[in-house]
Structures are given as structure tokens and as C-alpha cells.
Length: 583
Image (cartoon, rainbow, N blue to C red; front, side, top):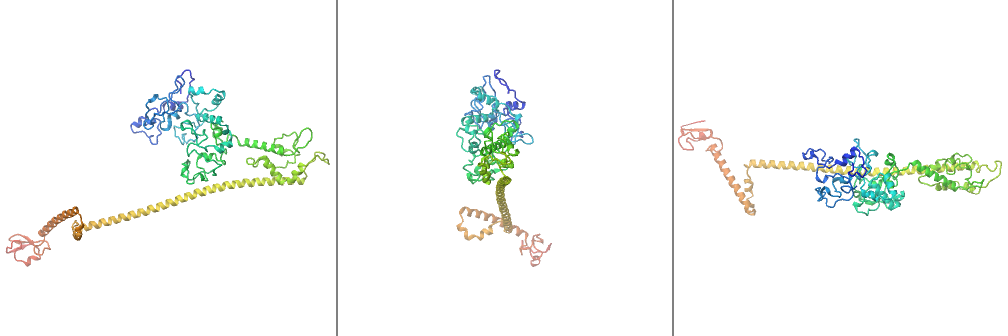
């Protein structure tokens, strides 16, 4: 981003970097105001939706200072509503959602390499398309420093390191820690103490990343391999898929035999420095320095150094003779370099010419040259005794005749073969132990999955039983409801009959309920009277069973049925002599 100060040299930014530094989350999303933004959940919009997501544009003033500090947070800022009493003129950092003001500041944006990979679209798998860290050397940008920060760099060494390094805040923090305590430059010290003690500095004054050798939370903590014995495989109760969960989810706690955090796995003695550092391969520089869990040196270079130290140890341990002015190992020509491993396998006059090259290189990462020499002495004790007591002899071959007979050479070759077999046996034994550990881990995971499957089956069975019970209760309720409807139907739609059967319980019923029963009975009586009147008007007056079907003459009263008309000679209604009737 161009500087406002003509005295400070302007830094040319890439278009993508300039766009994010200038406009990212500085304006409100217009689509969100219309409720049309599709990037609200999850929130991945380039613009801000709420005030606590709003970010101020960072600017370097004419005096070389920033319009707000990239490190010191404002104590007045309310992160719930995004308001500050000092407004946009506040000289301190606002803790916005996602800490965007600090991450996308001129001082820090894209100055460090992201530890996560990218997907098929080129986006960060963890932070999404707006990742504030660089993905590759082409994405890195040099930081823009405050004038006061530049003034603090006074010594030439700091200037040189600043110009040679990426200048990230974490690398500066790392250099400061290494300068204060040089013990962190020792790989063994890092392996034993990195992230094992809590950080004593306030959170705002600590970077809280790899640059701090102390842990800040349970996810960052690492159990000391000296105090706690655990394997390099992750704990199935903590790691689910690719994500590491909370270590407190493990019931075994610090006594668990598996890794609880990514730091514990990367800095485990079995994995530590076992793979190449990606930053060293791509850029030739790693900002993590001694705090990096990956190898910065080729394995062949390490093997070469160990071979040289082994050969020099062998040369120093073999007695020398006083042939000529130079004192060299017995049987090794003086023209061959002392520390060369090729001299042990390519010099025919040497009594060690029959030694296999694998004797020197088979297990150098676990044994030193002195240990190999002691193993050789164990198998060929009498040969080295002869070697220690040897002196130049005269004979048919002259003073340079072979020091060992053919039987001695064959015994020496047998000892070398035995040593080679021992090393191969140890190698296969180590591999077997690794396989057993992997099998044990897989077995534990399978047992955990089996328990989960059994628990799921049990829950499913219980759910089926509850479902069947619910269906049964539903059928019972439906059957009871149907019976009640039938009862009401046959009882004339009233509960009067049932109430009348319970007359003996009237004295125990409260008065309000008695009044309610009385009202119900009155309604039932009215209904009964209406039904009785209706039935009387429709049924025969004499039998009161069959319907009226006969009309009497001359009164025209329809009060008799066809059965009872023959039993009477007059009209039952008016008692007039009936002369005739019609159906």
C-alpha cells in the first residue's frame, strides 16, 4: 500500500494484497441490507454485516507512524456492538470479529506462512478464501514497519537478521527468545522442554504461536516425554478425523498412552525431525528456526557426518606402529586420508579390508563408533589382543607381511557377519515393535468403534421399543375413545345413567360439582321430556309401540296403528263413535 509520507519509501503491493489491505471488511455489504447475501452463514463475505465486524483501513502517516497500533488493543472498544468512544480516530487496535484489524494490518498481513494446505480451488482449508497468511513464496509480502519500531533496531546484527529474514512478528519473537536463552538452540533441549511449561507473560504481550516455547492453553500444551510415556499415535478420544479436539475429553488425562495435541505428535521423539520442512524445500528458509519439528538438513549429510565421526573413532581406537616418520593405523597406507570411509573398504593391504561397509553404516543413528568398536572387540577379543601386542616381524614377506593369517581373516569376516546379523535382527525387532504399536492402536480404535456400534444398536433397539409402546398406547387410547363414544351413543349422549348409578357417592362430592351434576340432570330431563313427547306423537296411543297408520272418521284423528284399530270402535282421542277409518 502506498505510504502517505514522501520521506518514507513507498512499498509496491501486489493487486490482490492491495485490495485486501484497502477494502476488506471496510464497507457494509449492500446485499445484506436487502437480505440477499448468500455468504452470511457461514460468514465469508468480503464486506462486513454487523458493526463488530467492521475494520478500519490501516494507513502509515507522514511521520512514519500508523493510524492505529498493530499490537496494543483498545480497552474502550465494545466488541459486542463494535463501538468505541474515540471512533475511527482511536490510536489503538480494535478487537473486531476474527481479529481482522490486526491480521490485515500493514504490519502483519501475508508476512507469515500458513500452516494449512489449500483445496482444489486454491483456498485455505482452515481459514477459507480470505486467509491472512501466505500460501507459498509468491504470496509472501514484506511487512511495513512503524518508525518507532525501526528506531529500536540499532545494532547491525539485528538489521542484518531483519533484512535476511521474512520479518514476521513470530520470527522476531523467536529471535528475541533465542537471544535471551541460547539453550533453545539445542535440539535436544527443544525436544525435552518445548511447550511443556505454561507461559508467564500476559496474553496481549505474547504471540501465542510456535515462537513462544511455552503453552497457552490445553490444545497447545505438550506433556514432557521425560515425565509422561506416550506413543506417537493420536488418542481416539481426542482426535476425530483431521481435527484435534479438547484433550480434557480423554478420561485418562496425562496418564494416557497416546498423543493429545498436534504439538505432542510433531515433537514426539519417534516423529521429530523425521520429515523434511516444506518451507526449506520451497524457499530455503524456515521462520520457525529451532522450533520447527521438521528436518532442515538432508539425511545423507547427517549420515556423512556420522560416518566420518565413526571412522575417526575407529582410527583413534586402533593402535599405531612407528613405520617411518608418520604414525598411521596399522595396515592403512599413509597416502589414504585418515577420515575417509573408502579407505576401510578399498585398501587391499589393510587387515580390515574384508569388513563390510554395512558394519559402519548399518545403525549409525543409534550407536556411535566406539560402540561398534566395542562390539568388534567382543567377537574378536583374541584378535585385538594379538593386534595390541604386535610388532614388526621379519619373515619371507619382509616387514610388510600381512598381520593376520587366513584363519584370522576368516574369523574376522565371521565376526562382521555376526554383527551384521545382530543389526538386522535389531532393525526387524524395532519394526516389529512399531507394527505391534500400530496393531494395538488399531485394535483400540476398533474396540472403541465396536463399543460405539453396540451403544448405537442398544439405543436403536430402545427407540424401537419406545416406538412400539407408543403405538400400543395410541391404539389403547383410540379403543377407549371409541368405547366412550359408543357408550354415549347408547346412553343418549349423556352420562346421566352413569351419574345416577353413583348416587351412593353424592355425599362425598363437593358442592360445585354437585351443582354441575344438577344442571346436567336438568338438561337431561328436558331432553327426555322432549323425546317422550315426540314418541307419544308418533306412536300408537293404545299400544305405544308401533307407529300411527290409521286415520279415524269422521274426526280425522291419526292415533291408531293397523293392529289396534280392530280393538276399538271409537276414537281414543275424542271418544267419538268411529264410523270408518282409512289407512
